[in-house]
Image 1 (spheres, rainbow, N blue to C red):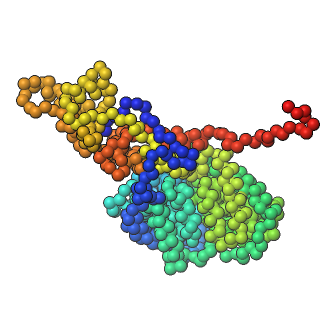
Image 2 (image 1 turned 90 degrees about the vertical axis):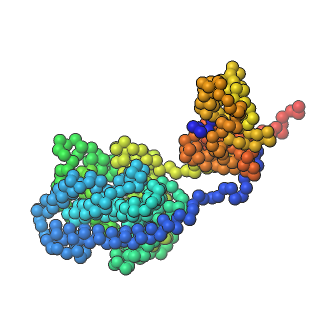
Length: 632
């Protein structure tokens, strides 16, 4: 059959739905529908992600050692993989201006002659691989991304290692997935598991890593992907002590002893609003710098070198702005900061980071955002009420991360996992979501999606339940279906149903026997082919042709208790626009038909729920007669 045909004589009608939401049709059997669509396939994928988690822990260790190596080479002229001192402690004098430029030159060459996918901070590239590239990443990315990032950071680049680790972990997850017979969605799970494993191995924040996967990368909330990602994150975190990647929590600070007061909770609103403004400013700074670089009359390969010169000049003013800056973040979270110095460092860090990232070099955004937030919180400590100088740096750190990356839950949980300070949950939650609300209302795209949008792609992070999943086929199908008797002759079939003056002239009709049992579908194309053959050989001796003889394949059916999403998927799989609906307890009994147009009805209902404003209860008070009013 060429297509499942049109089979109706009237406009589709939707059965009435009662006030409690139940339709007038019989309820489906309990076993017909389930909460989830997960299958045992998740066990195999989970086993793969356990391996991915272990690999990501090794990748994190390797990248940290590479950063230490290049820092020692560039600033201290020693060949050592051991943890190096901060670039701020170098003794190169004015020659240090050239160090970031040299690192930028190397990164530019790697991007030009290796792969340009290593440019940028990594997360947008991972998103593009998921949405556009069917979750396929090349081995070049897995090798050159950590190498280029280590060179950029080791030469003083003001970046974090988390973005490159996320992309590198994702690349390894994708490569493992490409070694097996997997679907695109299964490769996506492995890619995201690698990204989450890389982040949790670096920071020791397994739950925040899972939330990054959910809020930024998975584009779904399903057990088939959530379970493997959680396992990868947990395994990578569990491997941290074995690989000597650091203790947990990441920042050892005395916990707050008192529950935040009402004044502090109110001040959290102000902190969140201020952090939202700062988030917008740094995002605009990054893409303003990128726009300026695009105007240069030179190849983009040279842009990281120019960005490196700006980094070097900034390093002369504020040496602590060079490199990742974890020491600065930890000091701020411990309350060890001077407000004037914090302001200068925050400004210099923002300028050189925005310039370097806009130049297209390789490096992450998370650590610079954490530094900006922590230093901004230190500035607010001189203005907002606080019983502890460690309060606002942690609050603003979470708000800065959550609002800039548009991942508020990640920001909240990341701050708590860094310090284990649960008493600050409420001010962190308030400030983060106020900042998040401000940024989503004032900026259409985040620092992550703006780059993707500039490449002509659109990403939406508003996840909702599919309206097709909420509605059953029985609620939108047409029940008035025209059928064809199986014993109807060829001549009557052509003139009464397809070509005659009074024919309905649909593409096809369901064929039933005398008892109403569904036999199949007769299509116009099959009918005309047989008709023309009979017309070309009028003398040919053959038995009379009836409608049942023209049924080529078993009918494509669905039950009324199935969801509209299942109907849509079946239509897409078989490239048809209509399905026959049969009874749940009798697969041979036709009860209706559902078309692609019927599948718009759940969406119409959802639009009404979103846009139709109505008052359910009246706000007008009843009027009572005054006591002195004359009797009627």
